[in-house]
Length: 468
Image 1 (cartoon, one colour):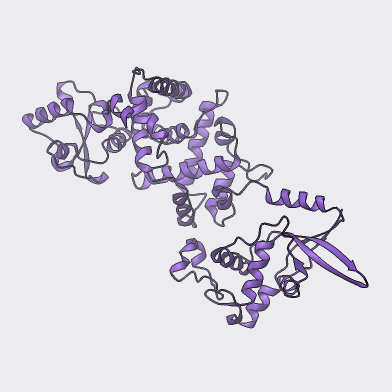
Image 2 (cartoon, one colour):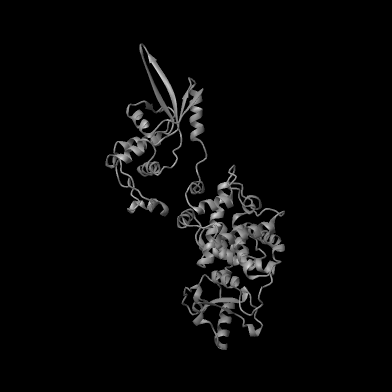
């Protein structure tokens, strides 16, 4: 087999060869045309933007019969792209306009760019844009061989690769946030994207792209809980939107530096320990560490790994009991955590529910020392109760009127009064509006009686959860 790499080809030469039928498809192994119009439009738009075009593979064949001979090129790889280019040159479709309704297909950072070809067919383009398209250089691998099986083998190798994951596609997007995620998550064989030990060595995730996706998801939650006091969805579409919103991401910002500090804090706590087994544990551990660094005195780091593994052992033991239809020692490890890792695990409400329970249990296991010993709840406790109580005023709920509450309008009520020996902890806390906070003895007693007699959502019995 002889392989010639030709870098002198252009899109114009490709169009001419297709028009004169020098390019052919071997239907014995080619799959036929599959791209829809949108895929063609986006590909042509990519050429105009100067994005790299994958190489084309052609099998050079010379045929002779009687006194006649002819040479043509069979397309081994590139059939869909060639058809898109040629059909556009023939005026078969117009390109998308980022400023119009269908331009929603484009991310925000593309919409702001100049797009003089938007909405135009080929014959509607000014001459300079037609020339820009035709003069675009491409790479062609021209293969000469009489062994048909070797060509088929090449076709299978080219077509049989692993499809790009959504994260692989994000890795090619422009923007500083893309670079940040690549650096933190790491990418094999690219030295500048070395990856932080927390994600490469300490967390048990072997896939490069899965590690980078986890970095993006954790940063989204970290940013959302810090700036909006909300747990956002971390589905594929939400990650895409976050990337688009972070075009102006500053790696030297306080948020980015804080993120790296948390990574290093966790690296120090887990180096030499067993690896963190699953991504959802790292998500909650990361957010908890952010709060611990802010509100508690140092020293908790020494017990962090042991406490996490104890939490995980309880989680797994409870999951086994549930599978075996046995009553677990603490059913909340399933009802408040385990089941929310099995369904809708990337939903903000599920993450919020898990994190409220995770934080409560980890604080009990760690027993960290507060920086300031006060009667009032710490910020981490306030946030935990805020999320645990579903951002709803419990006094209103007691009165049959479940009211959503904003962070700036909330207070935390001691269910058993502090003066009567009630502890300032999450188990003795309830979320209320400032105006609803019970003050009178009769109101305090009424609320306490309701609280301990009611079936709160966060205390769902195991029997109910098994029947769902």
